[in-house]
Amino acid sequence: MEKWLVGVDLGGTTIKIAFVTLDGHIVEKWEIPTNINEDGKHIVTDITESIHTKLNDLSEPKEKLEAIGMGAPGFIDMKTGFIYHAVNIGWRDYPLKEELEKATGLSVIVDNDANIAAIGEMWRGAGDGEGNLLMVTLGTGVGGGIIVNGHIMHGTNGMAGEIGHITAIPDGGAACNCGRTGCIETIASATGISRISKEKALKDSSSSLYSLLQENGEIKAKDVVAAAEKGDKVAIDTLDEVTFHLGLVIANLANSINPGKIVIGGGVSKAGHTLMERLEQKFKHFALPRVAEGAEMKVATLGNDAGVIGGAWLAKHNR
Amino acid sequence: MEKWLVGVDLGGTTIKIAFVTLDGHIVEKWEIPTNINEDGKHIVTDITESIHTKLNDLSEPKEKLEAIGMGAPGFIDMKTGFIYHAVNIGWRDYPLKEELEKATGLSVIVDNDANIAAIGEMWRGAGDGEGNLLMVTLGTGVGGGIIVNGHIMHGTNGMAGEIGHITAIPDGGAACNCGRTGCIETIASATGISRISKEKALKDSSSSLYSLLQENGEIKAKDVVAAAEKGDKVAIDTLDEVTFHLGLVIANLANSINPGKIVIGGGVSKAGHTLMERLEQKFKHFALPRVAEGAEMKVATLGNDAGVIGGAWLAKHNR
Image (tube, rainbow over all chains, first blue to last red; front, top):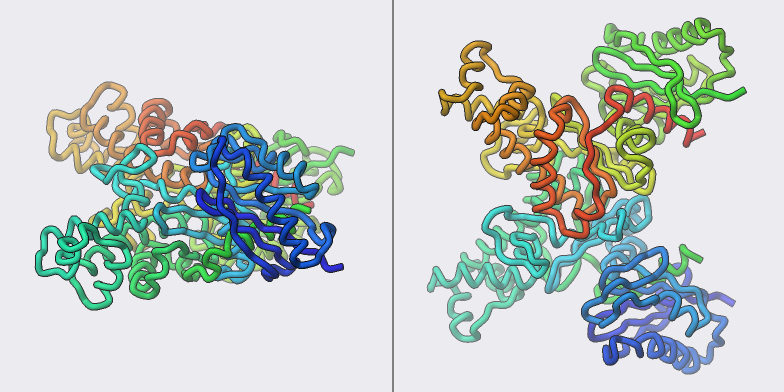
């Protein structure tokens, strides 16, 4: 019997689950809501029951499943699968690996959600099997994952890959959720792009973004991209500023870790070439020539599936 | 018979060689001049003969030696020990590993000189066995090595750890040897400190460094440190500026790779607490709290022995 791996990607609102073949193809994927009541105590039971129900639907025995690989937000001890603190979920000092193993009878491996997305892209996505990969996720925040020689880089206390809190503006930058100022997250996230475009639009009433701001009271990152494609100066200036800082941050990191692929994911990456051409140009300006040569920059291809596929990779490689 | 490892550290003017025990203690160390005549073709023979002579002196048989680990400057293919280009040595497309193995009859492993210093400090120096370590060498230039899970990080084409060419000043920085501008090497190297102090001293004739500049035509990095210790404002401003940029670069890198130790080596690190206190303060300002907590910053302890000890480590772990 060919076994399946189980990938689980835990988010603040939904839990994504998939059965994945040993070579990384999704057989079945689905979502359940994240029940954060009572400090997240129902989550493990919900996942377990959902997996069993799905097996029944597919008329497969429990033995079909090999192992579970799971991504979770927050501070995690990857070795023990212990969650120190996951703000959005309500877990504090929660032995996730132990609980999920007890409930499912399967071996479980847990890692950070940004890290499993990176390893998913390495395995089956834009990373194309490249073992030295930097993934940068541009969403509401800026996240990241670093793969070294085919393994997730964790660092000394699990903080490796926290790219969003690299300081891009040392003095006078915008306030960041982390309590500091000037982090790249305040610039290159959807929120950051929105903020910067708003500041610029308010100074230029000829911009289409100025009118949009008057109408809607806000400018979204995707509005900026759309306006830039139509040649709006404020939108273009915004993207130039954003990619200047992001390109510099990525180049500086690449000069140190020398990745073979740089994968840009998250909602903002859907901007496609309007963003990527600028970003690549800035990156090449600030990277050492040999580093730039070695690094192919690509948009992530797995979208929301990156996490469950990365989870499956973990399950496979830690059997 | 307890075997010895051979560590070799090739520099532009001298070759450092040592016999090292399996647990990393130097039994015997010596230097020979680097003969760069005829594109470095005599170097392998010189090393081989020097090792044999030393064995004879110590009345030890050739069988006493286990393997050779060697650090070399330039672009190296670490897997094959092939040197693409070592400017100071004269080698171009030189099969170092193959040649040295043929000459000595021992197995040879080759790595970048900055990397073997980092692994040496990890093994027997300030790194204290910490498997996630960042080494920053402040000398004529700024070099670096990154250790991840006890292994040297090489990256996709051997450029990992090229910390000196992280851009600290994106616009209007000083010219760097790499052809770009504003690299941290232009600021935090001995040369950089010298340059910055000179610029500042010329604007302040009350500074002791101004007088020194008039007398000697130059200010050395160690003069800046000495003057700062005596409270000279120009010297203090210089070190504040240097450590601001270096602290930011190291913090940004640490936010991504999350090292357990940060080891500062090279001639400039001899400035000791005058430099280190400032650097640590800036580092902590820009690092995420949990990253700063996890990272102990220390001055390198092995000095010129780091390379041969790191070479021995390589020889041991690649038998």
